[in-house]
Length: 486
Image (tube, rainbow, N blue to C red):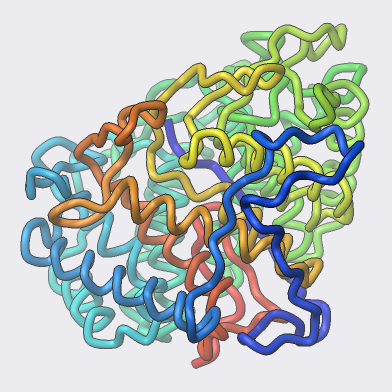
């Protein structure tokens, strides 16, 4: 499973929250030992522990994030440089796209994060590796969706922060190779895989996320190269699936690229559909495309009518039959927690707050969010955690939209829990079981951890000098396409 989270244009209300001294009153958190207010319906067990910021305020936390990033990067360079991902427990490495063929995934994903943190030596080190080694003439099938959000997005964001023309040249080369997955499809819905050397396509059985998570990367590539073909292909894929929505304005998640027909009936806001909705909103905000805004509004209204429900005082989104509205499951993936930020960005701040509250209850119970839960009970249905960034991402967005320091506090809890649970000898690793004490570790650090989680922490805790908090864009992979202050 992958994170398909979710980030768009973020606007700050005034200057509140940018530094340790803010224009917004910093809400004093309740003492962990204080009883809940009488008649509140909250039991003492529901009151979470609160981490107070250390002496030095939020900037000190940001500097701690920076130190942890620098230390982790050094371990990666020492043990796995150029390989896709480090194994931080054993000190080994593994490839993500093609066995035995490293593509430098971690390097590409980390570049804009290193730059934002002013880790200029590390950024230069990574950039040199890209100049010397990165080549997409590979005779192997690559997953189009993952290659787009990770490699194409990483190159575009690194170009945005540096202006290095080599990065845009590489991005254009890769974009042309990925575009074949769209142009060879009889419907315009992309195949899931394409051979980067031969252009052979495969796997027409696909899903919403893998058909609709291209408009920002392809659109930015069109804007920066002056060639509209990338944007047009991504928008066409959106149009095909939107036009096939049910009479309830819902979309099943499973679709066939060659026929355009649905292969199941289930509508979900989680994987493998989630970033489809995010990129409708993102495409509108980044490019001003009112078609995308209209499609987003129609589908979100259908989701709120048919899937949103309150259980035990908490907002969740059920899986339902897209054609009848019948609820089929009350499970929820951690990946869906990004929806709190998307709702706020789309103008529904109240629903965004409520959904983040729901996931906070899960964080309070387990410390680290499990991959999946049954939301009536909050029981974990999938007990691992893949170093996920969605909850922190949503906290960052909500903080920007509201100026409420509550979301900084929640992100701080998320960061502290990650440090206590995932830090190991050579970096940070996934958790195999969040329900054990201590939490049982895996041996794997996903590339997106460098692009997303570290970046959100840095931006929410510190007044990042190289980031425009008022006018910016972060992709579903956390890549910055607007807002770099060079």
